[in-house]
Length: 297
Image 1 (tube, rainbow, N blue to C red):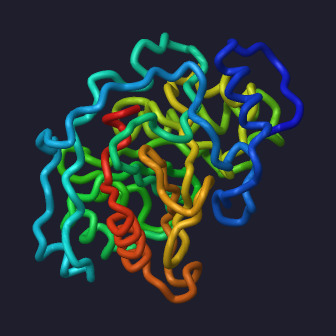
Image 2: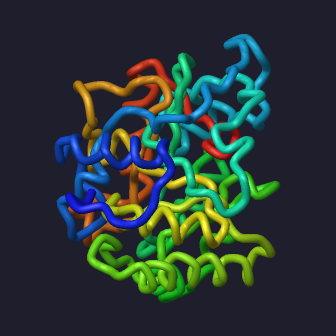
């Protein structure tokens, strides 16, 4: 988070920015950066409504994968079905054009976490098979000049899954550190990717993740102006074999987990599917399951 704030902000947005300034640099963001203070863990954004979660005994709104599918990917058993989603989302009632809510962690008492994958460099066809076999819910944040390289956006369209289970969201056109850019340049990066994704999928994505977790008030103004409802950060990051946490040494209810589309060249020979399997083992070992972020945000 920038140490200098310019431009008008609402009271809730000022609270979010001020809170983020005090956070330690605990988690690494995207590839090539140690991450800014905007990308470290922290408290939930001020002004965000607390959703009413369903009973743990409620049936899952998503299809569950069978045990054989999990065994094919080296996992002992399926993750538990998530609880019913909340009746009120964090962005409900947000007026058009308003600054998006900054969300690091979803306020819930349920033992659920949310998986997110950034950038789009690695396009492993085996991960498409894995995601479909496991009926795995996750959210993608794509950078245009990275995602369209190679086989392009067609790969991520396959990952959207049946009924567009996994959404595709905004991670800028070219992955800059937004805090180093002017307000106009930030608008081009954010709104430009909104336009790219709207042209492909018919609507502007409601979620945005700033590269490296770095943002300022100009970022919030630009994002809100081009249709973003939530700026999504994270509380845990996926490493090759396990996770790193913003606070303590374990997951907490509502944690958003940051991972990347990466392959063996960046994972010391480990494939993306093995990395994801390691992540799922850690989640299950800690007594958590995975829910769909868009059902809460």
